[in-house]
Image (cartoon, rainbow over all chains, first blue to last red; front, side, top):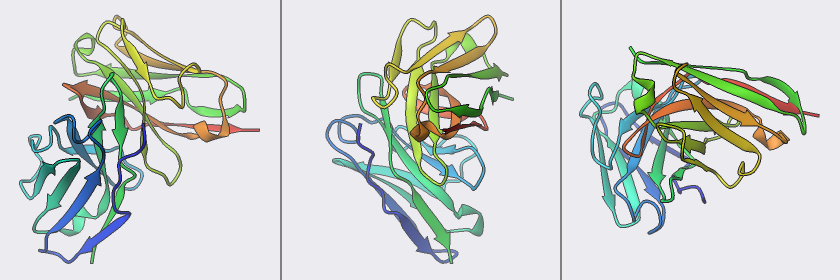
Length: 110
Length: 117
């Protein structure tokens, strides 16, 4: 149950694109297509932005997209907006009805 | 509108116990697996526990196994987390959340648990 590895911070200017990586192992990210991404603003509850690696819940802008290659999943945010500034967490199912989160990435919109 | 409202947090001494509750509305509670996830002050999210729809199957993070017990009362639309032998490192905001096919989906606002000597 080791945390997935995310960069501590990323940044971009309005209108640009940023990608946040999430690296695990064959026991979690690489082994299942149950990777999700959450956005969390300060003092607020997390909100799911991507699930099942690539799916977007209704209401989430299509500027948010997910992908996976091997043991690394990625969240890409295109056309950055000021309101995208938040913490982002990945999460993966790791079998035996257990889940693991990444350490979180702080996104700064310059 | 789906709502999950946690309660029961507070200040407790090291070694003490606390029971958290999460009342659900706006959904057919008995159809959903449920999770507890925690977040220590200034830190990241950590998965704690999960329970299936009828309460017959539970799972825990290694860090809480043997000390925490997840349960539910579908008649009351309520999820619980009994926390025993609390340690300083259990200090966190505890969120309850629904599950949808292995995705932790909808989250409550959380309740703060502070463990202090």
